[in-house]
Length: 314
Ligand code: SF4
Image (cartoon, rainbow, N blue to C red; front, side):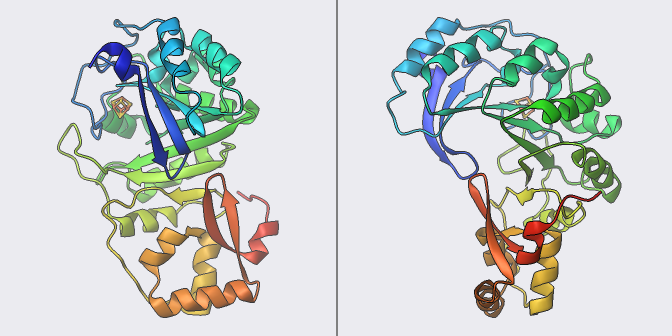
């Protein structure tokens, strides 16, 4: 495949972001400032800048061929980290001038937010997804194996700052790796940071594809248990279900309300966690207006009706 043909991919129907047309800003080789244990690409040495670069005009010419397709979002991504693309600001401005109603999204590991030029360029996008796997330096270094120039404390401060001024939809993603960031202590630290971040949604995931290094993900049940450790006011969503085993347990009406109070659940979560009888009683609670469905970006959550009025508390 020529470089040109591999710059644009999709559209892919993504549950979380809708119909997404991808732009790969490093189509020929992996170029990343992390070397994550769980990366679905092959392990590679970290870099702080791209050495192989495509021209903005080449990307725009390819993108224009696809703009009349039915797409919700143009997603900037890469074999590696898209913010290492040296002409990112220029590219975003060019896309914004031709995209019409289609939204723009970037999937980034957050580290480049410490660079003011990248920080300001990302403010011009409609949606930003920032990864934040750990806030403790030793755990961050073990999981994400960052370039030596990266300090997680500085990154976290910039993520908070970004969330406070960004006007678009901000998604945070935490990927759990068994035995590394899945401890109560690390979740408590992540929770404290997340309470400072103004996120539209926080996606909890785990390893869904063969990882670069021999590490394991956590089960859906463990992800659900981890999700319950976060503050109930946070817009947490369990994003990973590839290896989900159905738990299908009985919950009383009080248990249903209590669970939804701590953690709103999607239809997919309900199908995995509740047995048939519990699912029927959940429907009755909706009819009695004790439970409501609330839309958060592309996803619908069951939530106690009482909580629709609730404000975030620390
Ligand atoms: S940031 Fe993304 S591309 Fe880079 S190593 Fe981690 S998972 Fe792979």
